[in-house]
Length: 220
Image (cartoon, rainbow, N blue to C red):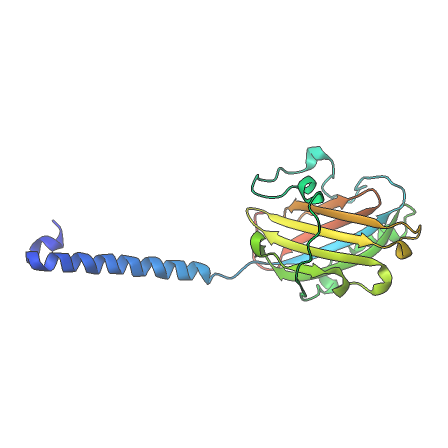
């Protein structure tokens, strides 16, 4: 039998109001706790290189193949690589993030192999740590904050997190630095899995990317 059955009739509505108020306060407290939860941070590492041979393959680097059969589907509420390619570049506010220490870099051995190769030429090896921002609040990182002006590399990069991690690249290698006077562009967005190497390419400019949770674990 409910405890309210022992209360006078005039007191029962007041008791019900107290219960409703307590329930509402508990819901608000739960929502505040969820909002206060820390945002997962990620170590982002990119090895950007020129493909001198025109051979579009990740070689034997243990990275995700770039072929259509190996690409993951992107939900309808998110832009695919092909859609993004048709969207004009919009100037976005850029930010800076802490640089990733050399001791945390995972692609150094691959960079060394490329330097000894006649088919590939490293352009930049960069890394930083940032929060996993929501897709509607993505922060763009200016490439110029990570590379020297002599590299000839320009553009911006963004890591965001919706249902999945996404890496957006808008890179340009100018003709003065390309070695053949040509200007090369790599503009894609790609769904990523943390702790895996991914290969992203255009005919002459490629990127190997690794995204690692900076603390804890991640399932994406």
